[in-house]
Image 1 (tube, rainbow, N blue to C red):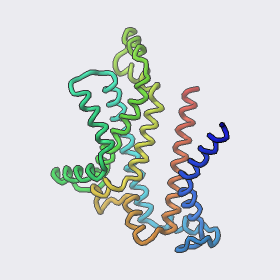
Image 2 (image 1 turned 90 degrees about the vertical axis):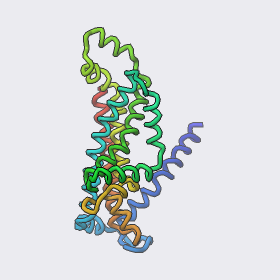
Image 3 (image 1 turned 30 degrees about the vertical axis):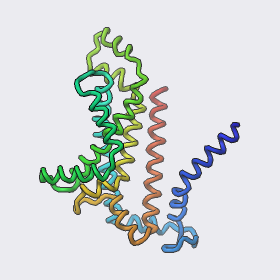
Image 4 (image 1 turned 45 degrees about the vertical axis):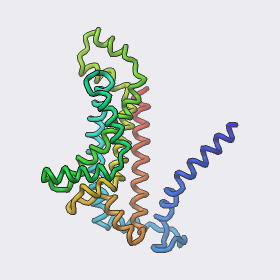
Amino acid sequence: MKTIKASYALIIYFLLYLPIGILIIYSFNASKYSTEWKGFTLDWYDKLLQNDSLIEAAMNSLTIALFSSLIATAIGTLGAVALYRYTFYGKKFLQSMIYILIVSPEIVMGISLLMLFAATTLPLGFWTLLIAHITLCVPFVIVTVATRLAGFDKSIIEAAKDLGAEEFTTFYAIILPNILPAVIAGFLLSFTLSLDDVIISFFVTGPSYEILPIKIYSMVRLGVKPEINALCTIMFVFTIIVVLLSQFLLKERQK
């Protein structure tokens, strides 16, 4: 039985990571246009470092992803705690609206945000992208943190109140340490969503601020170049490092 379960898990992981593995392998392929293996090379990584427009788009994407995920994590965490702790008029409606934002098509959010920015005459660029990505990520953070709060013992909060703890002290010293894994998970999820978003970004970005997904989308119309494979490989390794680092920090905190 254990062998069957292990084999099933291996098959699932193989199917999930096979496309990524092929991408990584072909980032070292000496052939530029053919899928046939022509030998090992690092030329595409060297050309990537010389491609200023691609590097600039990647840095723009990382900047937007970092700031939007940090702000969305802060807003989403506070929102999830408020929905968990307090009872107020319209709470059920607000919770329903959060889930509607998650399941609604991104094209609807992209067009609606574009209309909002046009009505407010806000020029398309960094700030419109940042606001759009925060709007995209906040519901996911709320749901992630709320799942962790669902198993939280409210009697601990009541005990803190009896001992004279204020609201900020209760949140910082009791609630936040217990939900920290969910907060980090929400941040990583937001970072990933922001980093690879195409549809919403297509509507709210401007010509003066190009991000990587839109740049790649415009480039692959003429075929996937090896430089893109190299860039995606670097970003994948970067993501793995971030995840491993977060896991290490969580284990150290638990110790």
